[in-house]
Length: 67
Image (cartoon, rainbow, N blue to C red; front, top):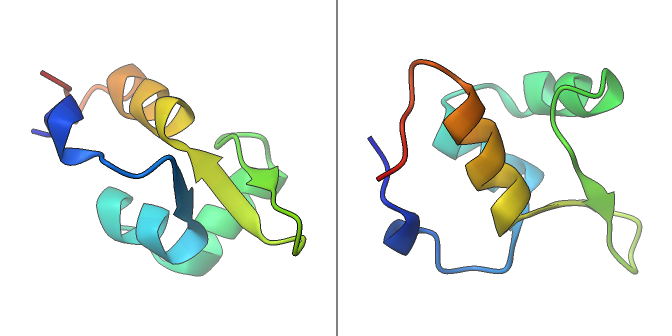
């Protein structure tokens, strides 16, 4: 279980999201391409996920609840 207070960054990179979700980074990229995860592109055209989007995804999944 995660606490909102554990998420201190504004944005998270692909590898960081993969670590949090316990997924391979290529799976995270595939989820982005399929629209399962909501990533944005930064000024360097790299994928980043905003904290609120990550927390929303975690809340939507039944196996991980946010306190």
